[in-house]
Image 1 (cartoon, one colour):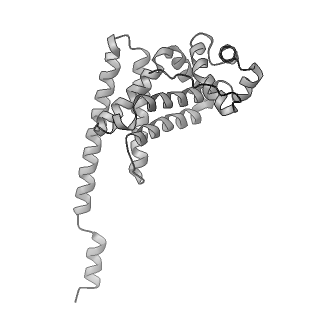
Image 2 (image 1 turned 60 degrees about the vertical axis):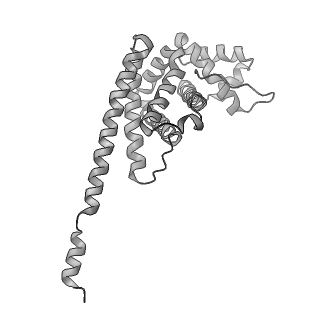
Image 3 (image 1 turned 135 degrees about the vertical axis):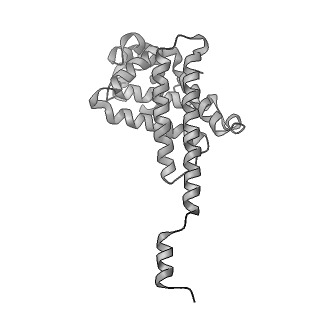
Length: 224
């Protein structure tokens, strides 16, 4: 399911205009780049005044990319509603969510390539990290993750890396049905699952280990 633009209401807010324009800008960014030309073409298709369209994206191309990635979030949610995800195991959920994002971006693969090149610029490093974290956080939340301790951060950091690496494979994948991308993602998630299993086993063993502080306390204050 591609990231389809939402319908524009009669008296739209800037946020609604931004959401409606973003997927259309992506369609033109494949040829024109993430710039004012692509924005103007998208605005013309939607019947939005060019000045209003520019006002919706004061940050230029980076904001257009941000809005498109948010549209991909929405497409992912539509493709995998709770009733569909609920029947899956965690590994299957994460795999399906990553693939749903890739499916949403597939019609505009060149736009994605250009977007990632812009985000790779040093001045956009913080935005790139934020968007990668946002995607990973969104996927984990849809997968039902409720961790609030360090696992919350480690899961998102790992998934952000897996997702980013998978996108790089996807951009150059000419195999039937994106077989190379799917295979790469499967291997990476297998690795993550093995890591999580090993981590859980280590933490369980550590919890069973005797506490040095309690042992010393007993030496100083023996039980009566």
